[in-house]
Length: 524
Image (cartoon, rainbow, N blue to C red; front, side):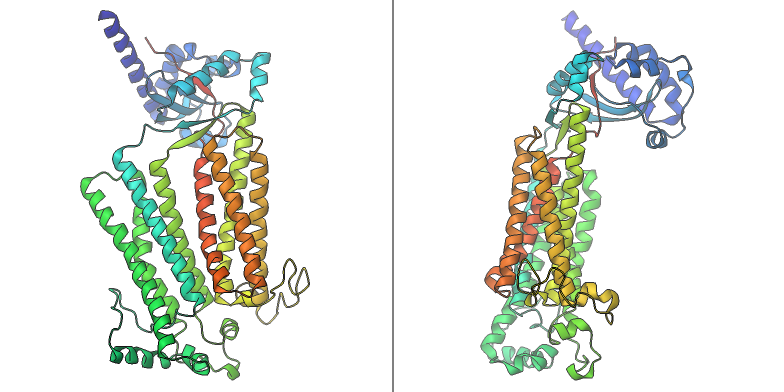
Protein backbone atom coordinates (compact mmCIF):
# COMPACT_ATOMS: atom_id res chain seq x y z
CA UNK A 1 0.00 0.00 0.00
CA UNK A 2 2.84 2.34 0.85
CA UNK A 3 4.45 1.63 -2.54
CA UNK A 4 1.20 2.30 -4.39
CA UNK A 5 0.67 5.49 -2.40
CA UNK A 6 4.17 6.67 -3.23
CA UNK A 7 3.69 5.89 -6.92
CA UNK A 8 0.38 7.73 -6.88
CA UNK A 9 2.01 10.78 -5.25
CA UNK A 10 4.80 10.72 -7.83
CA UNK A 11 2.28 10.61 -10.65
CA UNK A 12 0.20 13.39 -9.09
CA UNK A 13 3.28 15.57 -8.70
CA UNK A 14 4.21 14.82 -12.30
CA UNK A 15 0.81 15.89 -13.59
CA UNK A 16 0.75 18.96 -11.37
CA UNK A 17 4.26 19.94 -12.42
CA UNK A 18 3.39 19.47 -16.09
CA UNK A 19 0.21 21.55 -15.79
CA UNK A 20 2.11 24.32 -14.00
CA UNK A 21 4.77 24.27 -16.69
CA UNK A 22 2.16 24.45 -19.45
CA UNK A 23 0.29 27.32 -17.83
CA UNK A 24 3.54 29.21 -17.37
CA UNK A 25 4.52 28.63 -20.96
CA UNK A 26 1.31 30.27 -22.17
CA UNK A 27 1.87 33.33 -19.99
CA UNK A 28 4.66 35.60 -21.31
CA UNK A 29 5.21 37.10 -17.85
CA UNK A 30 6.08 33.68 -16.38
CA UNK A 31 8.27 32.31 -19.14
CA UNK A 32 11.49 32.90 -17.23
CA UNK A 33 10.30 30.62 -14.41
CA UNK A 34 9.18 28.09 -16.99
CA UNK A 35 12.64 28.07 -18.57
CA UNK A 36 14.29 27.39 -15.22
CA UNK A 37 11.76 24.63 -14.52
CA UNK A 38 12.38 23.06 -17.89
CA UNK A 39 16.17 23.06 -17.49
CA UNK A 40 16.23 21.89 -13.89
CA UNK A 41 13.32 19.48 -13.91
CA UNK A 42 12.16 18.04 -17.19
CA UNK A 43 14.65 18.92 -19.90
CA UNK A 44 17.37 16.63 -18.61
CA UNK A 45 15.03 13.64 -18.79
CA UNK A 46 13.48 14.30 -22.19
CA UNK A 47 14.78 11.99 -24.94
CA UNK A 48 15.08 14.94 -27.32
CA UNK A 49 17.21 15.04 -30.47
CA UNK A 50 20.64 16.42 -29.68
CA UNK A 51 20.06 19.62 -31.66
CA UNK A 52 16.96 20.45 -29.63
CA UNK A 53 18.54 19.50 -26.31
CA UNK A 54 21.60 21.68 -26.93
CA UNK A 55 19.41 24.66 -27.72
CA UNK A 56 17.35 24.14 -24.58
CA UNK A 57 20.40 23.88 -22.32
CA UNK A 58 22.41 26.69 -23.95
CA UNK A 59 24.14 29.08 -21.48
CA UNK A 60 22.36 32.14 -22.85
CA UNK A 61 18.98 30.52 -22.85
CA UNK A 62 17.59 32.54 -19.96
CA UNK A 63 17.04 35.58 -22.21
CA UNK A 64 13.38 36.15 -23.02
CA UNK A 65 12.98 35.70 -26.75
CA UNK A 66 9.65 37.39 -27.30
CA UNK A 67 6.98 38.89 -25.11
CA UNK A 68 4.30 37.31 -27.26
CA UNK A 69 4.77 33.55 -27.59
CA UNK A 70 2.40 33.26 -30.52
CA UNK A 71 4.19 36.02 -32.45
CA UNK A 72 7.46 34.26 -31.74
CA UNK A 73 5.96 31.05 -33.11
CA UNK A 74 4.78 32.77 -36.25
CA UNK A 75 8.04 34.58 -37.07
CA UNK A 76 10.76 32.19 -35.92
CA UNK A 77 11.00 28.49 -36.86
CA UNK A 78 11.01 26.35 -33.69
CA UNK A 79 11.47 22.63 -33.07
CA UNK A 80 7.95 21.35 -32.55
CA UNK A 81 7.22 18.42 -30.22
CA UNK A 82 4.31 16.68 -28.60
CA UNK A 83 5.08 15.58 -25.07
CA UNK A 84 2.97 12.60 -23.97
CA UNK A 85 2.67 12.48 -20.19
CA UNK A 86 2.40 8.89 -18.86
CA UNK A 87 -0.96 9.63 -17.28
CA UNK A 88 -3.69 11.36 -19.28
CA UNK A 89 -2.17 14.44 -20.88
CA UNK A 90 -0.86 15.09 -24.34
CA UNK A 91 1.02 18.36 -24.50
CA UNK A 92 1.70 19.87 -27.90
CA UNK A 93 3.96 22.84 -28.34
CA UNK A 94 6.79 24.81 -29.87
CA UNK A 95 10.15 24.74 -28.06
CA UNK A 96 12.26 27.85 -27.73
CA UNK A 97 15.91 27.81 -26.74
CA UNK A 98 15.17 26.79 -23.21
CA UNK A 99 11.45 26.61 -22.66
CA UNK A 100 8.15 25.82 -24.21
CA UNK A 101 7.12 28.91 -26.16
CA UNK A 102 3.57 27.81 -26.94
CA UNK A 103 1.83 24.74 -25.59
CA UNK A 104 -1.60 23.15 -25.71
CA UNK A 105 -2.88 20.31 -23.53
CA UNK A 106 -5.05 17.66 -25.17
CA UNK A 107 -6.62 14.75 -23.28
CA UNK A 108 -6.07 11.55 -25.24
CA UNK A 109 -7.55 8.09 -25.02
CA UNK A 110 -5.09 6.34 -27.33
CA UNK A 111 -2.04 7.22 -25.25
CA UNK A 112 -0.40 3.75 -25.33
CA UNK A 113 -0.24 3.86 -29.13
CA UNK A 114 1.21 7.36 -29.06
CA UNK A 115 3.80 6.48 -26.40
CA UNK A 116 4.90 3.36 -28.27
CA UNK A 117 5.38 5.40 -31.41
CA UNK A 118 7.11 8.20 -29.49
CA UNK A 119 9.54 5.86 -27.73
CA UNK A 120 10.56 4.26 -31.02
CA UNK A 121 11.13 7.67 -32.60
CA UNK A 122 13.06 9.05 -29.63
CA UNK A 123 15.22 5.93 -29.23
CA UNK A 124 16.36 6.18 -32.84
CA UNK A 125 17.76 9.66 -32.19
CA UNK A 126 20.27 10.81 -34.76
CA UNK A 127 21.41 7.32 -35.79
CA UNK A 128 21.20 5.79 -39.25
CA UNK A 129 18.08 4.00 -38.11
CA UNK A 130 16.64 7.33 -37.07
CA UNK A 131 17.43 8.83 -40.46
CA UNK A 132 15.66 5.90 -42.08
CA UNK A 133 12.60 6.45 -39.90
CA UNK A 134 12.54 10.09 -40.97
CA UNK A 135 11.44 8.88 -44.41
CA UNK A 136 8.97 6.22 -43.28
CA UNK A 137 5.38 6.85 -44.30
CA UNK A 138 3.54 5.76 -41.17
CA UNK A 139 0.25 7.38 -40.26
CA UNK A 140 -1.90 6.45 -37.28
CA UNK A 141 -5.40 7.45 -36.26
CA UNK A 142 -5.75 8.60 -32.66
CA UNK A 143 -8.49 10.19 -30.60
CA UNK A 144 -7.87 13.83 -29.83
CA UNK A 145 -10.01 13.73 -26.72
CA UNK A 146 -11.60 11.26 -24.37
CA UNK A 147 -14.46 9.13 -25.63
CA UNK A 148 -17.52 11.15 -26.52
CA UNK A 149 -20.23 11.44 -23.89
CA UNK A 150 -23.83 10.40 -24.33
CA UNK A 151 -24.92 14.03 -24.62
CA UNK A 152 -22.34 14.73 -27.31
CA UNK A 153 -23.47 11.72 -29.30
CA UNK A 154 -27.10 12.82 -28.99
CA UNK A 155 -26.21 16.33 -30.18
CA UNK A 156 -24.18 14.91 -33.04
CA UNK A 157 -26.97 12.68 -34.32
CA UNK A 158 -29.50 15.50 -33.91
CA UNK A 159 -27.39 17.82 -36.09
CA UNK A 160 -26.80 15.13 -38.71
CA UNK A 161 -30.54 14.41 -38.74
CA UNK A 162 -31.25 18.11 -39.37
CA UNK A 163 -28.65 18.01 -42.14
CA UNK A 164 -30.50 15.11 -43.78
CA UNK A 165 -33.79 17.06 -43.58
CA UNK A 166 -32.13 20.01 -45.33
CA UNK A 167 -30.96 17.65 -48.09
CA UNK A 168 -34.58 16.56 -48.61
CA UNK A 169 -35.72 20.20 -48.72
CA UNK A 170 -33.01 21.04 -51.25
CA UNK A 171 -34.23 18.15 -53.38
CA UNK A 172 -37.81 19.44 -53.13
CA UNK A 173 -36.58 22.89 -54.10
CA UNK A 174 -34.97 21.47 -57.22
CA UNK A 175 -38.19 19.68 -58.18
CA UNK A 176 -40.17 22.85 -57.52
CA UNK A 177 -37.99 24.79 -59.95
CA UNK A 178 -37.90 22.06 -62.60
CA UNK A 179 -41.71 21.74 -62.58
CA UNK A 180 -42.13 25.52 -62.86
CA UNK A 181 -43.94 25.71 -59.52
CA UNK A 182 -41.92 28.40 -57.74
CA UNK A 183 -44.13 31.35 -58.70
CA UNK A 184 -47.50 29.70 -58.10
CA UNK A 185 -47.93 31.16 -54.59
CA UNK A 186 -47.96 34.94 -54.84
CA UNK A 187 -48.34 35.56 -51.10
CA UNK A 188 -46.11 34.75 -48.15
CA UNK A 189 -46.81 34.53 -44.43
CA UNK A 190 -44.03 33.76 -41.90
CA UNK A 191 -46.28 31.33 -40.01
CA UNK A 192 -47.34 29.57 -43.20
CA UNK A 193 -50.77 28.97 -44.64
CA UNK A 194 -53.01 25.99 -45.06
CA UNK A 195 -53.66 24.38 -48.42
CA UNK A 196 -56.90 25.59 -50.10
CA UNK A 197 -59.71 23.08 -49.76
CA UNK A 198 -62.84 24.60 -51.31
CA UNK A 199 -63.50 25.49 -54.93
CA UNK A 200 -63.83 29.17 -54.03
CA UNK A 201 -60.42 29.22 -52.31
CA UNK A 202 -58.73 27.60 -55.28
CA UNK A 203 -60.36 30.02 -57.73
CA UNK A 204 -59.23 32.98 -55.60
CA UNK A 205 -55.63 31.77 -55.63
CA UNK A 206 -55.78 31.11 -59.38
CA UNK A 207 -57.10 34.61 -60.08
CA UNK A 208 -54.24 36.12 -58.06
CA UNK A 209 -51.77 34.01 -60.03
CA UNK A 210 -53.18 35.25 -63.37
CA UNK A 211 -52.17 38.83 -62.50
CA UNK A 212 -48.45 38.03 -62.50
CA UNK A 213 -45.83 37.71 -65.27
CA UNK A 214 -45.50 33.93 -65.38
CA UNK A 215 -49.13 33.52 -66.42
CA UNK A 216 -49.20 36.66 -68.58
CA UNK A 217 -46.11 35.76 -70.60
CA UNK A 218 -46.23 31.97 -70.55
CA UNK A 219 -49.09 30.00 -69.01
CA UNK A 220 -51.96 31.63 -70.86
CA UNK A 221 -50.48 30.41 -74.15
CA UNK A 222 -50.35 26.83 -72.90
CA UNK A 223 -53.01 24.26 -72.08
CA UNK A 224 -53.03 25.43 -68.48
CA UNK A 225 -56.12 25.08 -66.32
CA UNK A 226 -57.13 24.59 -62.72
CA UNK A 227 -55.78 21.05 -62.45
CA UNK A 228 -52.32 22.14 -63.62
CA UNK A 229 -52.42 25.10 -61.24
CA UNK A 230 -53.29 22.85 -58.29
CA UNK A 231 -50.24 20.71 -59.00
CA UNK A 232 -47.71 23.56 -59.13
CA UNK A 233 -49.37 25.26 -56.14
CA UNK A 234 -49.07 22.10 -54.06
CA UNK A 235 -45.39 21.69 -55.01
CA UNK A 236 -44.54 25.20 -53.82
CA UNK A 237 -46.71 24.92 -50.70
CA UNK A 238 -45.11 21.60 -49.72
CA UNK A 239 -41.62 23.03 -50.24
CA UNK A 240 -42.39 25.98 -47.99
CA UNK A 241 -43.93 23.84 -45.25
CA UNK A 242 -41.01 21.40 -45.38
CA UNK A 243 -38.67 24.35 -44.86
CA UNK A 244 -40.57 25.28 -41.72
CA UNK A 245 -40.34 21.70 -40.48
CA UNK A 246 -36.55 21.81 -40.30
CA UNK A 247 -36.87 24.91 -38.12
CA UNK A 248 -38.99 22.94 -35.66
CA UNK A 249 -36.62 19.95 -35.83
CA UNK A 250 -33.70 22.25 -35.04
CA UNK A 251 -35.08 24.72 -32.49
CA UNK A 252 -36.98 22.34 -30.18
CA UNK A 253 -34.01 20.00 -29.48
CA UNK A 254 -31.76 23.05 -29.23
CA UNK A 255 -33.95 24.46 -26.46
CA UNK A 256 -33.93 21.06 -24.72
CA UNK A 257 -30.15 20.65 -24.82
CA UNK A 258 -29.65 24.27 -23.76
CA UNK A 259 -31.99 23.83 -20.79
CA UNK A 260 -29.99 20.81 -19.66
CA UNK A 261 -26.72 22.70 -20.10
CA UNK A 262 -25.04 19.92 -22.11
CA UNK A 263 -24.12 21.91 -25.25
CA UNK A 264 -20.31 22.23 -25.52
CA UNK A 265 -19.10 25.82 -25.56
CA UNK A 266 -16.99 25.06 -28.62
CA UNK A 267 -20.11 24.95 -30.83
CA UNK A 268 -21.95 27.95 -29.41
CA UNK A 269 -20.90 30.10 -32.36
CA UNK A 270 -21.96 27.54 -34.96
CA UNK A 271 -25.35 27.02 -33.35
CA UNK A 272 -25.90 30.78 -33.25
CA UNK A 273 -24.99 30.98 -36.95
CA UNK A 274 -27.34 28.12 -37.80
CA UNK A 275 -30.18 29.71 -35.85
CA UNK A 276 -29.75 33.13 -37.45
CA UNK A 277 -29.26 32.00 -41.05
CA UNK A 278 -31.83 29.21 -40.83
CA UNK A 279 -34.46 31.55 -39.42
CA UNK A 280 -33.94 33.99 -42.27
CA UNK A 281 -33.99 31.35 -45.02
CA UNK A 282 -37.75 31.61 -45.51
CA UNK A 283 -37.46 35.37 -45.92
CA UNK A 284 -34.63 34.89 -48.42
CA UNK A 285 -36.83 32.49 -50.37
CA UNK A 286 -39.65 35.02 -50.52
CA UNK A 287 -37.16 37.74 -51.56
CA UNK A 288 -36.20 35.43 -54.43
CA UNK A 289 -39.82 34.75 -55.44
CA UNK A 290 -40.66 38.46 -55.38
CA UNK A 291 -38.19 39.05 -58.21
CA UNK A 292 -40.45 36.99 -60.49
CA UNK A 293 -43.72 38.60 -59.39
CA UNK A 294 -42.96 42.15 -60.45
CA UNK A 295 -46.06 43.39 -62.26
CA UNK A 296 -44.11 46.40 -63.58
CA UNK A 297 -41.72 44.17 -65.49
CA UNK A 298 -40.80 45.65 -68.92
CA UNK A 299 -42.34 44.19 -72.05
CA UNK A 300 -40.38 41.82 -74.26
CA UNK A 301 -40.23 44.33 -77.11
CA UNK A 302 -39.14 47.33 -75.03
CA UNK A 303 -35.47 46.19 -74.87
CA UNK A 304 -35.33 47.49 -71.32
CA UNK A 305 -35.24 44.17 -69.49
CA UNK A 306 -32.27 42.40 -67.95
CA UNK A 307 -30.53 39.66 -69.91
CA UNK A 308 -31.70 36.98 -67.47
CA UNK A 309 -35.30 38.03 -68.05
CA UNK A 310 -34.96 37.42 -71.78
CA UNK A 311 -33.21 34.10 -71.04
CA UNK A 312 -36.24 32.96 -69.06
CA UNK A 313 -38.95 34.58 -71.20
CA UNK A 314 -39.83 36.94 -68.32
CA UNK A 315 -41.29 34.03 -66.36
CA UNK A 316 -38.70 33.19 -63.69
CA UNK A 317 -36.89 34.57 -60.66
CA UNK A 318 -33.60 36.45 -60.59
CA UNK A 319 -30.65 34.04 -60.95
CA UNK A 320 -28.71 36.15 -58.45
CA UNK A 321 -31.33 35.64 -55.77
CA UNK A 322 -31.78 31.99 -56.72
CA UNK A 323 -28.03 31.34 -56.41
CA UNK A 324 -27.97 33.14 -53.04
CA UNK A 325 -30.95 31.15 -51.75
CA UNK A 326 -29.38 27.89 -52.92
CA UNK A 327 -25.94 28.74 -51.51
CA UNK A 328 -27.25 29.64 -48.05
CA UNK A 329 -29.27 26.41 -47.92
CA UNK A 330 -26.24 24.33 -48.89
CA UNK A 331 -24.10 26.21 -46.37
CA UNK A 332 -26.60 25.41 -43.62
CA UNK A 333 -26.57 21.74 -44.58
CA UNK A 334 -22.77 21.54 -44.61
CA UNK A 335 -22.35 23.36 -41.29
CA UNK A 336 -24.91 21.04 -39.69
CA UNK A 337 -23.05 18.01 -41.05
CA UNK A 338 -19.61 19.31 -40.06
CA UNK A 339 -20.70 20.10 -36.51
CA UNK A 340 -22.48 16.78 -36.13
CA UNK A 341 -19.40 14.85 -37.28
CA UNK A 342 -17.25 16.83 -34.87
CA UNK A 343 -19.46 15.69 -32.01
CA UNK A 344 -19.46 12.02 -33.03
CA UNK A 345 -15.95 11.45 -34.35
CA UNK A 346 -12.95 13.10 -32.72
CA UNK A 347 -10.27 11.03 -34.41
CA UNK A 348 -7.28 12.77 -35.95
CA UNK A 349 -4.37 11.58 -38.04
CA UNK A 350 -0.91 11.28 -36.54
CA UNK A 351 2.12 11.32 -38.86
CA UNK A 352 5.17 9.56 -37.43
CA UNK A 353 7.85 11.03 -39.69
CA UNK A 354 8.44 14.32 -41.52
CA UNK A 355 8.05 12.49 -44.83
CA UNK A 356 4.64 11.17 -43.79
CA UNK A 357 3.68 14.60 -42.48
CA UNK A 358 4.64 16.20 -45.78
CA UNK A 359 2.52 13.73 -47.72
CA UNK A 360 -0.39 14.20 -45.34
CA UNK A 361 -0.17 17.99 -45.64
CA UNK A 362 -0.15 17.68 -49.44
CA UNK A 363 -3.23 15.47 -49.24
CA UNK A 364 -4.98 17.98 -46.97
CA UNK A 365 -4.29 20.92 -49.28
CA UNK A 366 -5.34 19.19 -52.49
CA UNK A 367 -8.48 17.79 -50.87
CA UNK A 368 -9.51 21.29 -49.82
CA UNK A 369 -8.79 22.56 -53.33
CA UNK A 370 -10.99 19.87 -54.86
CA UNK A 371 -13.75 20.63 -52.35
CA UNK A 372 -13.51 24.35 -53.18
CA UNK A 373 -14.05 23.63 -56.88
CA UNK A 374 -16.98 21.42 -55.91
CA UNK A 375 -18.50 24.33 -54.01
CA UNK A 376 -17.96 26.68 -56.97
CA UNK A 377 -19.59 24.14 -59.29
CA UNK A 378 -22.65 24.00 -57.02
CA UNK A 379 -22.77 27.81 -56.76
CA UNK A 380 -22.51 28.23 -60.53
CA UNK A 381 -25.26 25.63 -60.88
CA UNK A 382 -27.62 28.20 -59.37
CA UNK A 383 -26.89 30.55 -62.28
CA UNK A 384 -27.26 27.71 -64.77
CA UNK A 385 -30.72 27.02 -63.37
CA UNK A 386 -31.63 30.71 -63.06
CA UNK A 387 -30.71 31.44 -66.68
CA UNK A 388 -31.94 28.10 -68.05
CA UNK A 389 -28.46 27.69 -69.46
CA UNK A 390 -28.83 23.92 -69.59
CA UNK A 391 -31.04 24.32 -72.67
CA UNK A 392 -28.19 25.65 -74.81
CA UNK A 393 -25.00 23.92 -76.05
CA UNK A 394 -26.43 20.45 -75.53
CA UNK A 395 -23.45 18.56 -76.93
CA UNK A 396 -20.47 17.15 -75.03
CA UNK A 397 -17.48 17.20 -74.69
CA UNK A 398 -17.57 20.20 -77.06
CA UNK A 399 -19.91 23.18 -76.82
CA UNK A 400 -21.73 23.80 -80.11
CA UNK A 401 -18.96 21.81 -81.77
CA UNK A 402 -16.18 24.00 -80.36
CA UNK A 403 -13.82 23.92 -77.40
CA UNK A 404 -14.31 27.66 -76.87
CA UNK A 405 -17.83 28.42 -78.15
CA UNK A 406 -18.84 31.59 -79.96
CA UNK A 407 -20.72 34.11 -77.88
CA UNK A 408 -18.70 33.31 -74.75
CA UNK A 409 -18.22 37.02 -74.14
CA UNK A 410 -20.49 39.84 -75.26
CA UNK A 411 -19.17 43.36 -74.82
CA UNK A 412 -22.62 44.80 -74.13
CA UNK A 413 -22.92 42.68 -70.97
CA UNK A 414 -19.44 43.24 -69.54
CA UNK A 415 -19.02 41.51 -66.17
CA UNK A 416 -22.61 40.30 -66.35
CA UNK A 417 -21.44 37.71 -68.88
CA UNK A 418 -20.30 35.64 -65.89
CA UNK A 419 -23.82 35.54 -64.46
CA UNK A 420 -26.32 36.20 -67.27
CA UNK A 421 -24.76 34.96 -70.51
CA UNK A 422 -26.12 31.45 -70.95
CA UNK A 423 -23.05 30.19 -72.82
CA UNK A 424 -20.60 31.69 -70.31
CA UNK A 425 -22.55 30.41 -67.32
CA UNK A 426 -22.60 26.87 -68.69
CA UNK A 427 -18.91 27.07 -69.68
CA UNK A 428 -17.98 28.11 -66.12
CA UNK A 429 -20.12 25.35 -64.65
CA UNK A 430 -18.43 22.75 -66.84
CA UNK A 431 -14.96 24.10 -66.03
CA UNK A 432 -15.50 23.95 -62.27
CA UNK A 433 -16.80 20.39 -62.59
CA UNK A 434 -13.72 19.33 -64.57
CA UNK A 435 -11.38 20.92 -62.01
CA UNK A 436 -13.26 19.26 -59.15
CA UNK A 437 -13.01 15.84 -60.79
CA UNK A 438 -9.36 16.35 -61.79
CA UNK A 439 -8.17 17.39 -58.33
CA UNK A 440 -10.21 14.63 -56.71
CA UNK A 441 -8.69 12.00 -59.02
CA UNK A 442 -5.17 13.34 -58.33
CA UNK A 443 -5.81 13.28 -54.59
CA UNK A 444 -7.16 9.73 -54.77
CA UNK A 445 -4.18 8.55 -56.82
CA UNK A 446 -1.66 10.01 -54.36
CA UNK A 447 -3.57 8.75 -51.33
CA UNK A 448 -3.32 5.16 -52.61
CA UNK A 449 0.39 5.21 -51.72
CA UNK A 450 -0.20 6.32 -48.13
CA UNK A 451 -0.95 3.95 -45.22
CA UNK A 452 -4.17 5.78 -44.38
CA UNK A 453 -6.71 4.37 -41.88
CA UNK A 454 -9.64 2.50 -43.47
CA UNK A 455 -12.18 5.22 -42.65
CA UNK A 456 -10.12 7.80 -44.59
CA UNK A 457 -9.85 5.54 -47.63
CA UNK A 458 -13.58 4.82 -47.51
CA UNK A 459 -14.41 8.51 -47.41
CA UNK A 460 -12.03 9.29 -50.28
CA UNK A 461 -13.49 6.50 -52.41
CA UNK A 462 -16.96 7.90 -51.74
CA UNK A 463 -15.82 11.37 -52.83
CA UNK A 464 -14.35 10.08 -56.09
CA UNK A 465 -17.47 8.02 -56.81
CA UNK A 466 -19.76 11.00 -56.12
CA UNK A 467 -17.69 13.34 -58.31
CA UNK A 468 -17.62 10.90 -61.22
CA UNK A 469 -21.34 10.23 -60.87
CA UNK A 470 -22.15 13.93 -60.66
CA UNK A 471 -20.19 14.80 -63.80
CA UNK A 472 -21.82 11.88 -65.64
CA UNK A 473 -25.29 13.03 -64.59
CA UNK A 474 -24.47 16.53 -65.81
CA UNK A 475 -23.51 15.21 -69.22
CA UNK A 476 -26.73 13.20 -69.46
CA UNK A 477 -28.74 16.26 -68.42
CA UNK A 478 -27.26 18.19 -71.33
CA UNK A 479 -27.64 15.41 -73.89
CA UNK A 480 -31.34 14.89 -73.10
CA UNK A 481 -32.17 18.63 -72.77
CA UNK A 482 -32.76 18.78 -69.01
CA UNK A 483 -35.46 16.16 -68.36
CA UNK A 484 -36.76 16.18 -64.80
CA UNK A 485 -35.88 12.48 -64.36
CA UNK A 486 -32.16 13.28 -64.80
CA UNK A 487 -31.92 16.95 -63.80
CA UNK A 488 -33.45 16.41 -60.34
CA UNK A 489 -30.93 13.68 -59.34
CA UNK A 490 -28.16 15.89 -60.77
CA UNK A 491 -29.16 18.76 -58.48
CA UNK A 492 -29.42 16.42 -55.51
CA UNK A 493 -26.04 14.94 -56.43
CA UNK A 494 -24.32 18.27 -55.90
CA UNK A 495 -25.38 18.28 -52.25
CA UNK A 496 -24.41 14.63 -51.80
CA UNK A 497 -20.99 15.29 -53.36
CA UNK A 498 -20.30 18.25 -51.09
CA UNK A 499 -21.39 16.17 -48.09
CA UNK A 500 -18.91 13.46 -49.12
CA UNK A 501 -16.19 16.12 -49.29
CA UNK A 502 -17.08 17.28 -45.78
CA UNK A 503 -16.85 13.70 -44.50
CA UNK A 504 -13.47 13.16 -46.16
CA UNK A 505 -12.03 16.47 -44.92
CA UNK A 506 -13.20 15.54 -41.43
CA UNK A 507 -11.33 12.23 -41.54
CA UNK A 508 -7.99 13.81 -42.55
CA UNK A 509 -7.77 16.33 -39.72
CA UNK A 510 -4.33 16.19 -38.13
CA UNK A 511 -3.36 16.21 -34.46
CA UNK A 512 -0.58 18.77 -34.82
CA UNK A 513 0.89 19.58 -38.25
CA UNK A 514 4.60 18.77 -38.25
CA UNK A 515 4.61 17.43 -34.69
CA UNK A 516 7.26 15.11 -33.21
CA UNK A 517 6.18 12.79 -30.39
CA UNK A 518 8.25 12.13 -27.27
CA UNK A 519 7.35 10.56 -23.89
CA UNK A 520 7.67 12.67 -20.73
CA UNK A 521 8.75 10.54 -17.72
CA UNK A 522 7.16 11.21 -14.31
CA UNK A 523 8.76 14.07 -12.41
CA UNK A 524 9.92 12.98 -8.94
